[in-house]
Each structure stands twice: as structure tokens, then as C-alpha cells.
Length: 400
Length: 140
Image (cartoon, rainbow over all chains, first blue to last red; front, side, top):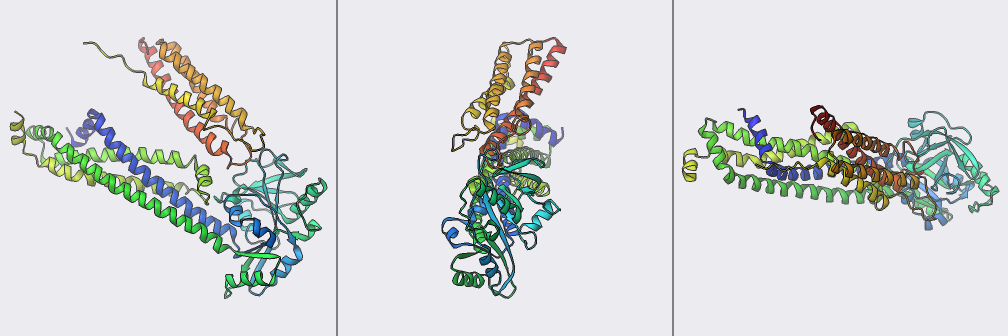
């Protein structure tokens, strides 16, 4: 009988032992594949957030800065609206060191108006925008008309349906690609559309604290700083000279997320490393304990003509088979825990979370499987060596 | 030698999963709870899912008691249909709440999809087993 076939039969025959070793391998592969996927998803989310923000500095009204956490708006999709005079935005755009400036208007829909959630509406200026437009062009590819809206990846409304905001029907013309951030829960349109909606809200009697004519207000100004100028200096300059505005460097916002991510990544790395070492020790101990139990079995195999090399190969084949099956089961289990529940994980972590694509998934799964196989084979190799060296005569004499 | 009666592991697993689906949806896997007391579209789906879970649990109970292959095939087919329905109900056959970040999207839908897939797989195995037993003329 071939060693591979013998190894397979041994595993089937000793179901309890196989299940126990397999469970250990499953644990290792869940920790390895699951942990790596979570860390990579967080990194993807952080990169995506950086790409989507686009701006170096975001300027909001100083009254809003006191009560609004900008990072919550971008990371968790918390809704918010605040306004400042458009003239102030124009003055800010003239600040030395500012290369590009684009205004946006925020608006929160009414819950009763459209289904069962308050939606953040973000209006951008297609003439000057440099943060949302590349994203829109990538996902939609056309220009937005009056009242047309694009929905974020996490807004569950089909394209073609009309979204009713403050009594105004806004046709949903497209869906944007997922960013893994709070921006996925917003609705995007042109700045003129938001101004129309502001007027509609005013007409319906909703107080949105708009200072004057809706045509002359903005919520935030996104700034790109010229090369050679310090982002912090430009932000400080605005904070000193524009009393009614608050400039927030986006780098600070991202670095806060980056710090949290580094903390999570190091925790996951410690867990993976610990699990790896612990399981290597447990598996080695388990295989070594089995040496005594299986000495007689291997002695009998030696007597019927199996060579030492074939015995070692049988033991290694058993380890490889358990590693393969346990590894695949662990990867499947981790994938079942992470992929369907990724929105829940993102909500609990409160950080940008963007799952890796199919290519990265396959690569990660293969790497995890190879690593698990390596641990299993490494742990079994010492036992395989000792088993192949059994003195058949002595063992069988002892038994008789 | 007395032979031990084979345990209907798959049917027991179907029963446990179906009960877990119903109890889970009624408790920790339930629909969105809106702060203002309004009921979202996911509430109705959750009630249908509880009913489907109860139906599959009842089907498993009957399968545990009846050994006739014909009855078991019919019940397995019914379970398969109910499992497919449960899989498609949240999001495909009936719309969920507006935001994909809401509880019905993040907890209820994925949990239902995983449990109903497992139930469908079990039902297929039961169906194949039942057809085989019918061909051999033995009790399933």
C-alpha cells in the first residue's frame, strides 16, 4: 500500500485524533487568514479615505467646528449640516499658498421623506471640485443634471428610483464605488441641486439655520495647498485671519485613523504570532505523544516490509492531509465570518474598512494555507523522524 | 450482535438550525430597532423568516418520527423550498431598510443567508438520501 493511501486510511480510522488535530489547525488558519484580511481591509480603507478626501485642508464654519467632529462625518457617516457665507469661502480661496479651492454644501434629509434613514446630502461644485469628481467620473462617467443624485455604495436605493428630499423628487442616476468609509452612506449632487433643496426645506418651514439666501452659502471649502507651502501653516493662517472659519488639515484626521489602525494591526500581529507559536508547540507535543502510542503500529509496518523512508513519508502525509483539510476549513470559516459581516465589523471598529478584491483574497488564502501546512509539517517532522527510527524487534518483544 | 440504530444526524442538525433561525431572528439576529418607534420594512421580513424557521423545524420533527422514504422526500423538498425562500427574502424578494449600514443589512441578512444555505444543503442531502432509500425499497 502506498504511504499516501495508508496515511488517508489512518486518518479515517482514528477519527477522534484527526478531529482534534484538525481543530487546532482550523484555529490557526482562522487567526492567520482572518487577522490578515482584517488588517488589509483596514489599510485599504485608510488609503481609500485619503484618496477620497483629496484635499489638504477642509475649512468649516467655526461654530460648526465646536459641535461637529469632521472625522465622524467621513468615517462613520454621521449626518450634519452647517453653513457660512459664500463670500467668506471666496476670501479663503485667495489665501496665499492655496492652489485649488472648491466649496461643498451639506444637508441632512428628513427621515420621514425617504424610507427609514436620515441621509447626508453632499453638494459639490462640478466647475472646481477635485475631491468628489474623480470618484464620480470613475463610477458614473457623466455630468450630473439639475436634481440628479448619485448614491453611495451603502445607500440601498436602486438607480432610476426617485429619492424624495424635502418634498422634491431627485432621480437616482448612479451608484458610486465603495470606499469603506462613512462617505458610502451619503448622497451626492451638484451644489445647485442642494441649494434648490435648501429652498424647498425653507418653503416647508424647516429651520436649517441658513444665514440668508441659500444661493450665497456653503458648508465647507476644500483646499489643495501649493507645493512648497506647509499645510499646517496655511491652516494656521486661515484660523488666525478668518475668525468665522476653522481650517482642519486632513492629514491630522487620517493620522488619527492611522494610529488606531497601527494599534489594531499590532494587536492582530501579536495574536497571529502567539497563535502560531502556541499551536506549533501544541502540535509538536501532540505528535510527540502519539509517537509512544503508535510505536507498535509502526513496528508492525516495518516487519511487513515498509522502509524507514516510507514510514516517515506516511507520518508526514498524515500531517499534510490534516493541514490541508484544517487549513481549508479554517479559511472558509474566517471568510464566512468576515465577508458577509464586513459592515458590522466596520461599524464596530469605527474605522474605514474596505475588503480586498478577489485577487488579493485568493493570494491571502493561498499564503495562509501554505503557512498552516508548513506549521503542521514542521510539528510532525520530529515525530516522523522518531517513528521511522523505531526498532521493530525491540518494540514487538516488549509487547509480547 | 445487536446493531446500534443510526442517528439521523442531518435531520437533527436541520432541526437545530431551523430553531436557531427562528429564535435568532426573534432575538439577537432581529430587524432594525428605530429610535423613534417607527417600523422599517425589515420587520415584516423578520416575521416571515420566523415562520419559515418554524416550518423547517416542524418538518425536521416529522422527519425524525417518520421513516417512510416518500414522506421524507416530500418534507426534504419542502425544507429546500423554505430554505431558498429564506435566503432570497431579505433584500431580493423584499426590500430591506435604506442604509446598508443598518442592522437588517449588517446582521440579519448575512446570518439568514448563512443559516439558510446550510439548511438548503442539508435538505439536498436528505432528498438524495430519501430517493436512494426509495429505490432500494428500504426505510430512510
